[in-house]
Length: 113
View 1 (cartoon, rainbow, N blue to C red):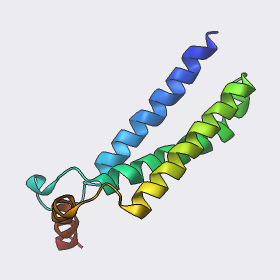
View 2 (view 1 turned 90 degrees about the vertical axis):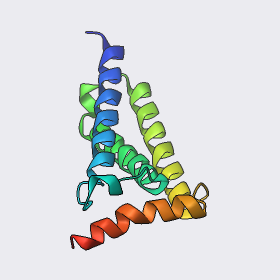
View 3 (view 1 turned 60 degrees about the vertical axis):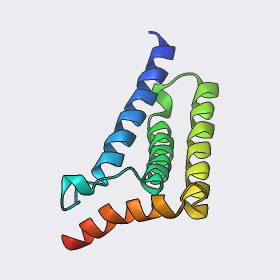
View 4 (view 1 turned 45 degrees about the vertical axis):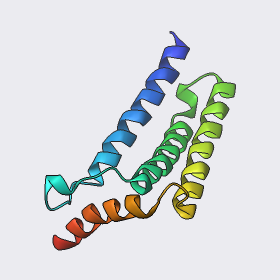
């Protein structure tokens, strides 16, 4: 069995789930033209991906025989989580225009609630 391929498949699974989760954050938007890229949602997806990778690895630890690589997965997952959390809390990449554009889907969602 090619164990390197199983780790690549693991990261592909986490990446696909993270991208789908990012897209799902826009499902409750009132109109499609209200959907704009949002750094905050991207950072939240990073947090989600980090948590997902850690939880999945901890549940499937015995399925992946390379314990060093497993620890590496947990380190990368923690780095994703911490960097996403730091960026979402600091809003370092969000300027006035980006903030206003992000408010369009936010208020569009409010229409449906």
